[in-house]
Length: 275
Length: 170
Image (cartoon, rainbow over all chains, first blue to last red; front, side, top):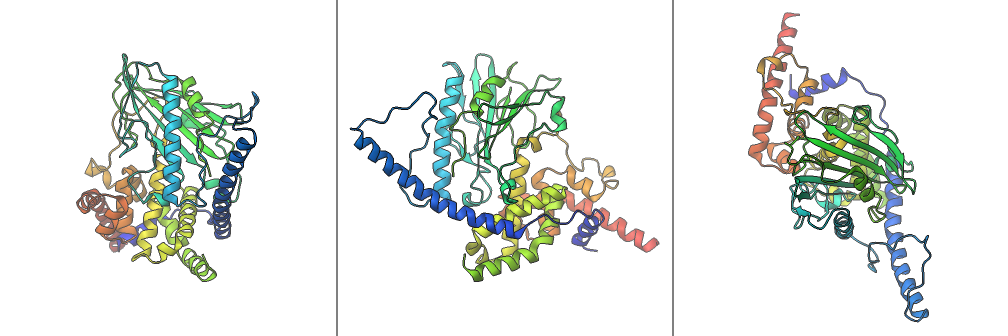
């Protein structure tokens, strides 16, 4: 009996439902995606040209915007007609780095120090957002997930925050529109998980307290934005939040960021994955 | 992708659906997640089919994409955290007590393994990939693959032996 046959026998003993993998939907989705990439790049280029033209026509002054106008995009419009996956990854990572750094600095007092952690692998500064996972396949095979995880140190000690930014794939693979996770998984309810709706239709799942008897604490929020961007933010009261789920010994009594700050960070309009 | 390439892709994924689905199930132990992982893998293959079809070992490449899709999903926090109200203070390590191993089913054994070790075992012993191919997929050294699979191999040997004994005595 080979090892493979042992595995096969075990799997056969637990027969699953018929496969829901839909080739046609996958192919159709990938075709749409390809068209969108090409068309999207063209639209960005046209939009940039139109914006420049408008400024020139208006005498060199940008048009006034009303109070209800959406915030300006955090990314500089590219005039490159198409981007390779690597270029797209780099552009998104750089833009998200700017967004995360600005927001974290705004949320915490000036005396706080941000330190490198192992979360973003080869990053060169604590705020550098990197494609995720950083050490596995080449970036062009996982171009829809990013992570950053600076350690945060102040007078109370050191903690860590990890921000995962992901564009929902599973739902779109099945030809559906983004499917937000709208309720807490049962295991999280005991830790205070509850759902809220954000001002722009975001679905927030807020879990304020994973505490253990040794004083280790985690708070986290999961946010699904209307465009399918999913954001998960963990904050911990020890340094170097581990990607393997290990729990660290507390290095400060309380978390370095409040749950309200996590929500504010997640709802930043720049914290989305753009097409 | 032209029509010929698309036909080639369709033929490939049709043939690979069940083996990949089983591989995914061994990794994640959930048929719905397995289907999602296979769908993600097939989407990536479609995007890079020209390069994939030119790969030296397409099967190893595809299993690499699948495994890393699973590791990626698994790293997401709600998969990383086992719990809840109280946090575990000791990591759940596999096979520490050899006496317990015999009582474990194969799936229970797999579930107790950390992600990369589980992936190493599935790639080596179910997908029949070489040590070098497994190491490349997981981004670790060949020596690490050997050490990560050795405990699993011992446990599987026990299972194989007990199975043989059962057959001989029946």
